[in-house]
Length: 236
Image (tube, rainbow, N blue to C red; front, side, top):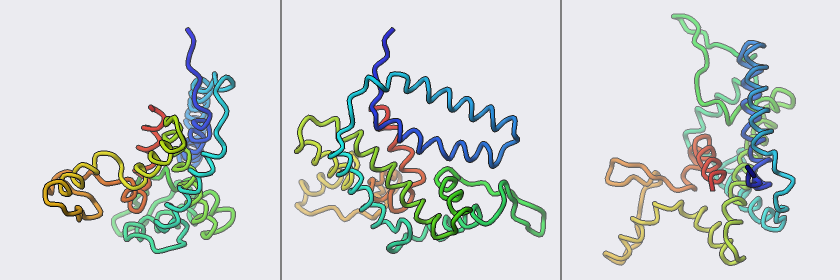
């Protein structure tokens, strides 16, 4: 049975997503579990990309555009602390600092005993390793670069599905400015009363469902958003 060749941009995206898993294996697990987890991951990657040589070459011009857009989004969101960052990062920056300064795994000491750090750590681990070697500023830069690269490859995978240059520009613009479903309430309000929707940044629908735009996710929760983006792009 012939397997379709994976898109070449999937390999660097997969490597970026695999690095935190490898860091967790060897930083938080026993040696036996670490080597078993790492071996399973490498075998999975080898099987997934065994047909890569027959895949079409990358569109380097499109990739450059996607990376430039991704860097701009990450910089505007406060990535690498170039600009203001949203309040959620007051806590998240503390996690990155602790991962840089403390040995792995480590525990917080409280009056009732030690409590192990438990959080979604994936987005922090590779930047934290950079920080252990070169300091906190380098860790912040690595976090911003990592997020921009993941977003850039996601944009490339999504945009290359369009057949024309104009179509690719439209795809990138819609991805960045909306996300899909969140355009519906905006259009509905425009059609019903002729006004633009003034949605809060979390894009709550009826006070119950949150269906935030990609920009909101990149500004507030890239640790959750980028994982979903990457899965959707790989599925596409």
